[in-house]
Image (tube, rainbow, N blue to C red; front, top):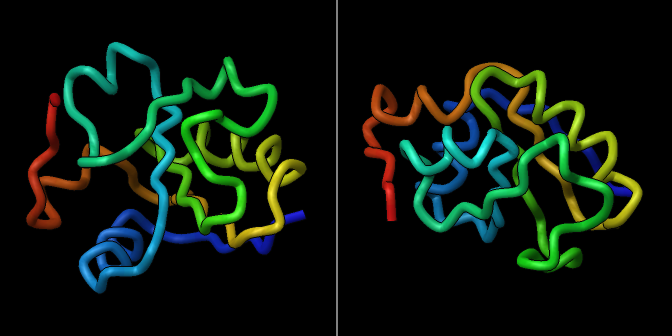
Length: 108
């Protein structure tokens, strides 16, 4: 089981700006992700998570984020079974907060 840490979107933004080695898993829908997402984040819609996403290293700390926190919490409950690394869950705020925090979303 992972060490679970609950964050706000502002907390995650600050950790990334500080250069913390952290994978970001976006658990919104593909349409939401395509409309704008955090640079270098990986998409895995929350309703499709049954194990650890192949695009992520289960040995590295990972942050789970969605639009407002609910889907991230649900996804983290599943992901917790598949890693012993630190798992950060954005339970307050989400991807739509990013521009207000000073970092634009990407559609790449």
